[in-house]
Image 1 (spheres, rainbow, N blue to C red):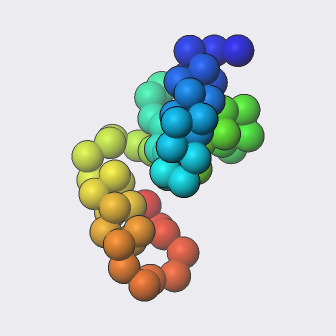
Image 2 (cartoon, rainbow, N blue to C red):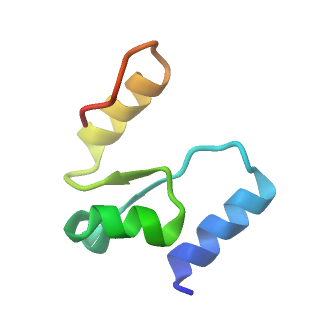
Length: 68
């Protein structure tokens, strides 16, 4: 189990309802594998600031699928 897996598991244990986004080089290179392997809800597969703010805007709206 990686540090990311342990961290996500700890977050899920303490706050099971929160949404988790993961980023970084590995996540950007292998986003689908990262989602399956870590249990995160979202992967930020590009430069972090703009996709994360777009995702937050989506999650607080009544929009359809996120495109970020």
